[in-house]
Length: 299
Ligand SMILES: *[C@@H]1O[C@H](CO)[C@@H](O)[C@H](O)[C@H]1NC(C)=O
Ligand SMILES: *[C@@H]1O[C@H](CO)[C@@H](O)[C@H](O)[C@H]1NC(C)=O
Image 1 (spheres, rainbow, N blue to C red):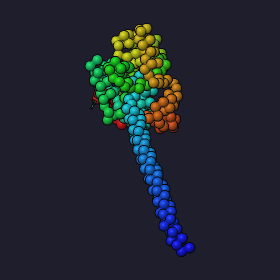
Image 2: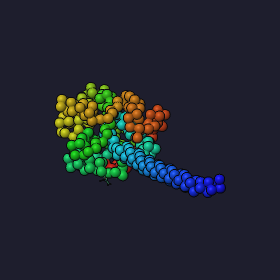
Image 3: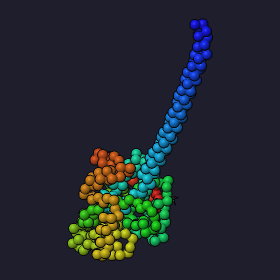
Image 4: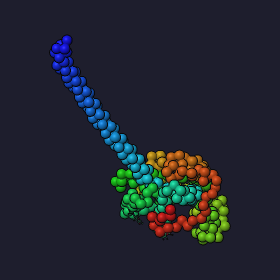
């Protein structure tokens, strides 16, 4: 028995060694597999992190460019005299610091609504390239100017207000004689003339002549000389074409609140809060609408 035990012992030892070796191999294999898995996991995590960073970067890029696009806007309000344009312009001034945009007055010499071709080029360049002023709302008594004719990629947004032609003329007639609430002290061209509009018509006066009803057409028609030919069919068609195709929105004096509401909906970047401000009637009064050239900064 003793010799058997001695005989068996090396066998057992061998078996034990084999078992140990197998176990080692198995364990080593397991460790290897684990390491491989860990490597895979690490690579996957790294990929996820990179994707996350990239995504965040593109989102930031998008947000930035959306802001850029929203700020790279110019609105031009080429106001027609006596269409409630001062009330509306004051609204724009009242909102400019709250909504962070600039308001600039386009002052042309002698209030001439038409600029020379040279001045048109300068104006288009100035408005387009003046980054510091964007977003901006320009207003002034100038007739429509098609920016795309000057090779500009991004056209401004045009808005305007029209009024019943006779109402407008009557308003203008009395404005020349009695001024308005905005600048009550200012001496007007026809001050002292007490003739009523009806009396003027009866006497065939020039201030109330039917030709004066034409004025709103050239503001929409543009800078072509034919636009200023009173009664021109072409000018009327051109004005209507521009009103429909080139203007974002054209309000009516008699329905100014609707105009303000629609503007707030269409251009909140500029007109957020405009409807409430208009309704509560806290419009600012009185500001001299007389600046040097276009480029008169108020806000
Ligand atoms: C636009 O004109 C104003 C003054 O009229 C001037 O101060 C400004 O520098 C001009 N901007 C550009 C970009 O030409
Ligand atoms: C507007 O421009 C005209 C001519 O360029 C000038 O005579 C007038 O004074 C300007 N208005 C103001 C108040 O700057």
